[in-house]
Image 1: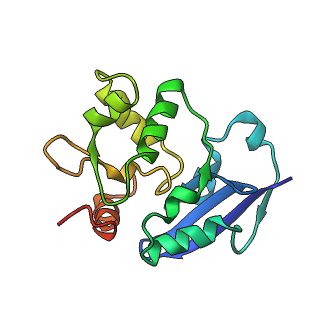
Image 2: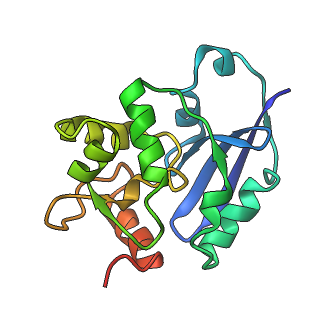
Length: 165
């Protein structure tokens, strides 16, 4: 079965999506080509079929942008990465929409309280933007920190979710 590729128009620009049937394996605001970089060796060899919408996933993402900020919780994800990154991505998914945690909190929730830099690296290597919500991770003291797609997008997402006043 081929991987499914679609692009969703959002208030932040084109959101490129790559799925294995109903499992989201990539999402970014950069390019379709960038979706394939973090794939494991098996997925990298699979055919990719471009379609208009990916059933369930596109609808849930549209619901999110339409105001149902909890809609992302219903999307199943899978991404390739090291053990700590996997733990960090799992911890990110537990941060509710409308809330933020610090990179230090993320390190602790990932099982390695001293691994604050590794927590930041896990955010940077996250290949499923929005659904694995690295945008909800901020610096100690509340500064936004970094975001691969620009701080303007991170700020928009946090405002959309009601996390910023």
